[in-house]
Structures are given as structure tokens and as C-alpha cells.
Image 1 (cartoon, one colour):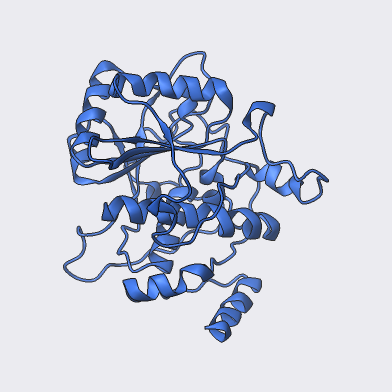
Image 2 (spheres, one colour):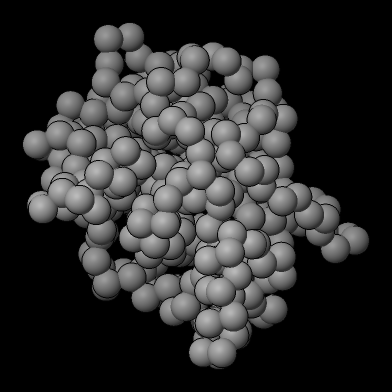
Length: 309
């Protein structure tokens, strides 16, 4: 295993991708989970996912329709008969609350969605849709997809119709991940909107002994992923600062459970997993310390847990 790992690392140092799956079965997935190897991509211009033009991607149905910021993520074809029996990374289109903190629904796309889909397929035995999908919470197709993702939920706004649709989706087995929002104001904005969905349920801090942190990778701490600009600068910062504001130094993973103890919603607060997927190849330091060590293992654990529970 060590020889294979060193060979893959040599490929990474020369900027080459590995095109085969690291794991051929669930048993191998658990055996190799401790040594995630993610290929490093070429440099990109710009920083972070913030500031994209609001509504620019409104007509797109998949991230694959949008030109990536850096090197294009490889596409692939799933085995015959599995064209629809695959995991699809679904990002939710939504409105942005006026006068709120946080960015729009399309922050970090398309790179984050496509990179994560590629890495999920590469390091697990899960068959994955190469294109991803964009949906609104009121779209009928939502029921066909067990996992959905919302970014920058500090600016979340849900109409009454959307709140009802989201509640129906979640109580019937769906799973929602909320990611990339910072500080108390953005938390309050998101939590207030989720109360429209579940007036009688509250978020609970997820303890590190929860099975989610052991189902693939052995995650022992809730580490912070900064935006790519802060992450790049942290290499030279004596404090290695990774937080975006003074009230956002501590990372929280909080969940809403159903009556049987199933996680319906997970919120990763004061951290930016989306940038970890989006800018994985911006520079070696960011890739090694944030994408490879934190963003991908956590996302893969969350998706694996959601799909098996």
C-alpha cells in the first residue's frame, strides 16, 4: 500500500490525475480510507467563490453546462444499467434574503460540485453522476435525489411553499447539507428560516463520537476550512488564522434529527467546505492542508452516511 501511495504522490507532484478508482469495493474503501489521495490541479486566477454574478447560472440545469474556472474535471460513463442508479450531487437554487449576510446559491459552482463528484467516485466504490444537478426545493424531481446541498445559507430565504416542500422532502428520507456561512448573524439568518421548516425542532451539536465521523474516514476534530485567500495567507501568518471574522473562530457541525434519531439536516458552520472542493489546486499548501485533509474526508463521510442511513 505504501508503494502505491508513493506512486500516486509522485503523480500529484507532476500535476497528473489518477483516473482509476482507489477503491473497488466497500471493503477496500474502509481499508484505504486513512490514505485519501487527491490529485492536485493547475493554478487558477481569483480567490474564493464569493462575488459571482447573482442569477448568472439561473438557466443552467447542471454544473457541467458551466465553464470551470480552472482545468476541467474529467467526465466518465457509469456501467450499463447504472445510468440512473447513481449518486448525484444536487445543489439547491434559491432566493437570497434582502439585506442579509452571505452570498447567493451559486457560490463556488461549477468547480466545487464537479470536483467533489469526481473525488467521491475516485476514492470510494460509489457510482456517481458526472454532471451534478441544480434544482429548486419545489421541483417535483427533488424526491428522486436523497442528498441536497445549500451554500451560503446565511442569506437563505424560504417562501411558505418552499418551506413546506423542504419539510416534506426531509421527513420522507431526504438529507440537506448547509455549508459556508460564518458568525452569529449568518447563523441566526439560517436558523430563522429553518424554523419555517421545523418549528418544533432545534439544531444539536453533533458529537465527535457520532458514527458519521467513522463511517469512512476517521475524523477526530472539527477543523476549519478558510476561503482560499485566507488559506493561502495562513501559511505565512504566525497565527495561521483561518477564520473570516472574530465571532467565527470555532467550527460547529450541528444537525436536526427526526423522531427516530436520523439526521435530516447537517450545518457546517464557520467553515468553507465549498472552497476546499472548488480551489483544490490553487496551490499546494491549500490543497494539502485544507482540501485533502479536511474538505474531502468530511464531505465523503457526510454523503456516505446520508446514503446508508
